[in-house]
Image (cartoon, rainbow, N blue to C red):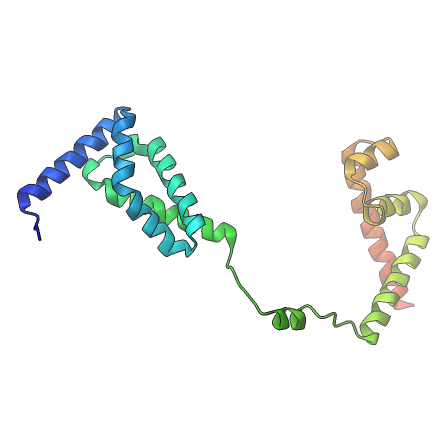
Length: 193
């Protein structure tokens, strides 16, 4: 069993510093040696964070691409390992935040959660709301009614409406805003009656 002496450690440190400086000067071969030296530790850190081998491999590649692009910013070449670890941790956190938590569930649990809980009362209230909105739309002027129906019922985009109504998009936005306010007033009046 061999033990490292202080001389061995300082030689390894000097070799690391030399490789990092060479990579900072644009030596791709030196950077490749750094990748070989640190790829296992980067992968292990990524796997520990992500708990998925495929994602950890993707992240490790992303880490080395980022390191290659930013290696010129590393001021202390002897800190390359820690710098690489911080990049790995940061990118893993970003990936986890974008991905969100992965949750698995049994089929029975999913079936229980995804049940349609429509009650007769909820259906009756939804029908009543629809009737009130239709009544409110009938009480609006033709332009307001056409504008709201085109956007909310037919699902037309503002650009499509601009073409259909032969008006600028800004005008269509204003019409939608005004028509919504008028419909809200009509619905309030219908609720009072």
